[in-house]
Length: 87
Image (cartoon, rainbow, N blue to C red; front, side, top):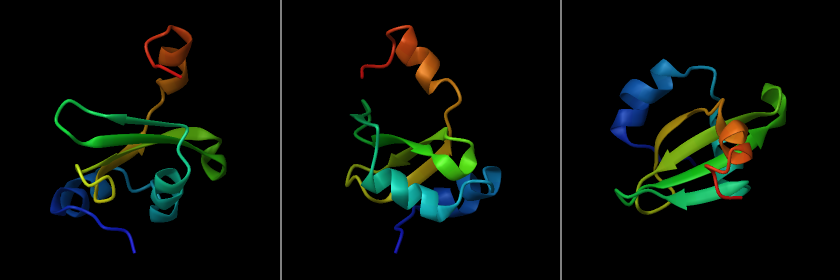
């Protein structure tokens, strides 16, 4: 079962209805990158083959499992190519 914040349920899921919960779970389990933000939240990135291999970014609370936001990060690989995203 996916744990989510009220913000996710009330806002993020409504703003990004194309993001499927099974994709969020897949990114949490098999990320291409994980980074802790300055506010303590954890960002996960993962490729979604069923969405034209787009990169989904999932932001979780400090516990690393309660989802706060999820959206497609269209510039992830461009930032990596420019050296702005560590491998």
